[in-house]
Amino acid sequence: MTLVRTRIKTRANSRSTTRISSREDRIVNGIVYVACALVAVVCVFPLLFVVAASITPYGEVLRNGGYIVIPRAITFDAYRELLADPAIPRALSVTAFITVVGTALNMLLTTLMAYPLSRRDLPGRSAVLLIALFTTVFGAGMIPTYLIVKATGLLDTVWAMIVPGAVSVFNVLIMKTFFEGIPDELVDAARIDGAGELRILVQVILPLSVPVMLTLGLFYGVSHWNEFFQAILYVRDPDLQPLQVVVRNLLARSQATENADAVLPLVTVQMAAVVVAAIPMIAVYPFVQKHFQKGVLLGSVKG
View (spheres, rainbow, N blue to C red):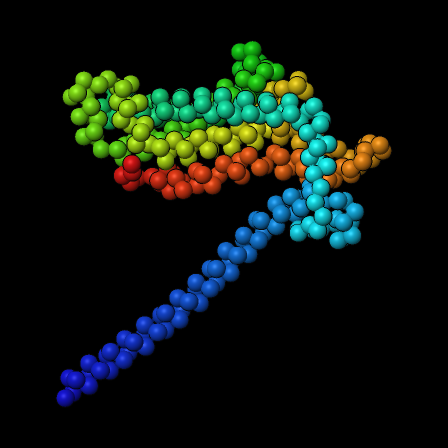
């Protein structure tokens, strides 16, 4: 009888503990949800404001105290005026070129460097890895890099925004770790069938590496699309300036220099320029986001 009472008391205590734990979990979950919602609002509100300001008549923006999120009237005059400026389409073409060509070159060189380093039987593998890691800690600096770009004739060309950053050691290490997660038996089987290293890479390794290829491709693509610093350093020709530099110049333009004959206020055109510069990467991100976990996660078997 005593044993039965003890068991009943133990079960009651267990249920009470479960209810308390469940209540605590709900409280913690609620705090996490509220925090995530606040972060989302902080991140999304500036974007909504910029988009709304770019498509709202400026008079309505002023009537709302300069801030508006949901416009009552919509006009695309700012985008028409922006795209009518020859500097914007020209900057878009330059940015598209360095994004497409630069990303392709980045992925080619990163793959060709990561695959040999992922093979444990590569002679001198440790020394090459050590040299690569050394460059991540000790950089040459701005002035020596500028002198190298100038000496190689890349100054004032679009290649000055592509070649100096052709390979990222960090991305090489991510891809190398991903390749190491692919079972060696697949490579050995391909070798037994007579495949060479290039054929193994193209027909065996790369088809299993779609997540890391898309993830690193997005990293490189976003970096090239937002190219600004190297363009300021190496490119002086206005016809070769990428979109971010042109947008920066537009945003820095003072209201005092605004054209008196302009139909639209400068602020509306500035907001439209920001939207044009940001939309392509925002549109691409959802298609690649699902591969991030498999593409970036290190130290596990993937594929």
